[in-house]
Length: 144
Image 1 (cartoon, helix red, strand yellow):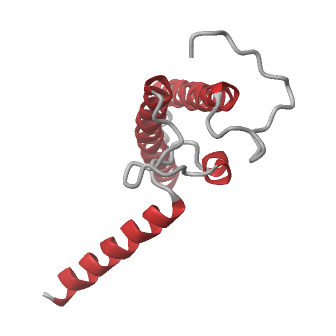
Image 2 (cartoon, rainbow, N blue to C red; image 1 turned 180 degrees about the vertical axis):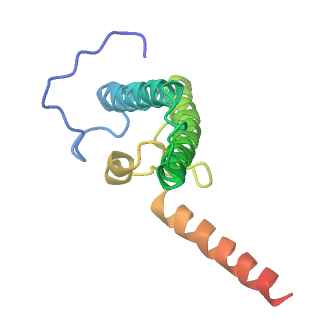
């Protein structure tokens, strides 16, 4: 994308347009960037909460509760970190002109799937096939 694209505030990609045209790519780029910013801001809030401590509660139950909350928050932030990595990969695919197409088949992933999961790398059919193969493998391993 060389030209700057300004999206109308109410723009939503439709099947009537050419798939992954510059406007759709800009729409998904902005969606991914906004999601990433939100995750980063949440992480900053978590760091601030952790700095404030709270583990010096005199009551062991209160202390255990605070520790459990912080542990859960850290696991959530770790998932967010992994998601940011997927977002960065999706942004790179937009730059490279590969966004919106299945890694396995090269077919379009589809607007509805990308709207629901903008970091998707597989079409629904390829994802289902992948999950079936994974389940089959897991079932085989469990038998051993």
